[in-house]
Image (tube, rainbow, N blue to C red; front, side):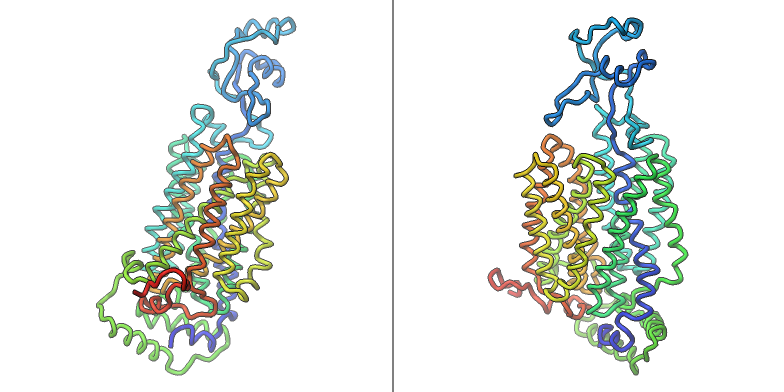
Length: 539
């Protein structure tokens, strides 16, 4: 007997699980969605050109004609953002009507700062600290360090989640995120701001992992798909909400406050959020597990099975006798100790790397599509929602593996196809949306499938390891976008290739639909890879 045998009797998805999901876990997804991408708008770079104080009395357009040369950028003539004519502007301002515009003049770097177009943004960190031209890499550096923070944080918090429990882990993430998020708004210079953003990055996406894991561990096998879909819908709605917030709030300090302060309300849910009964049983904390399970049964209006806790103790004791250990502490080496779990970990981690890289990369890419950056980000988030209409029945009928493969291959093919139509902006936008839908679908399936493949004793650690490796992608993707700015489809080609390879490798994993969650390392070893044409990992 294990928890999956008990849940059908006390309610696999009853009133208790629904209340926890809708009141706590779904709102608990919003902090990650807001803080993962608000930095794109805090550090946005609007159009800008050299400031010439001597011409401040002259209308802006005429001033630019006098002082700023035109450059060919991606086939379009635009005012230079970093160059100005070397002229005597004091004399020009006095004799403006007689000035000869055709007179060739030496071009020099901006020497008096810049004028920024404030039609979209009232103030960003780029505008406040002049992070353009020789400093235009600074916003990219901020995204890179934000990704590094996420990589480090996932590694650390994976141990917290498995060592101290899902509940304290979530509120630890939330506290750190709120403190650094508020501090961001009061940063006096770029380097302090960068430090605070790194602190926020430590919790992204670690804070998203606990709602995923806890939702799956509270319900029965046939409801795992539902709660996973609901968690992802909540995350997509967080991004849609963020698009509306950044459109309304275009001053970066106020934006930092608005996207952080509301989440202090989540601390009031401490008493509502339970600890995972699966984690408590895996830690042999039977009294605490009995309390949670009894509460589930009571609120669901179901009777508890007779003598169930003793039966669970007997089963766990028998498992411990088979492989006697005192107080077992699990580490990363346990993920690679046995052949089946080793290959599952490697494949899941590779797919997680491709998913994280492409999902974050496409989200970062939205403002580069041209047009309205706010609308582009809104569309990038909104196109995720239709995928859930067909993904839920597909996962229940076709299983996790084929849905994961199809989503990644279709999304990757769409990204690769942009190379053929790179000069047609509307078709490129359409293919981009198909790619975003594909990666959004696979991003739903992967955490669920990984949670069902990793055993309970290392589930949080396994997901954290895979996520940590996956977070290398968001570290690299900003660099790819920065270096590939001359060819906007280059990042899409790279991401499309990764998606197709990841989709094909997913066919190696065994199907997990309606299967019992493995509790121990031995349970995980019982099911090998599902690929008769490859190799036998049991040998």
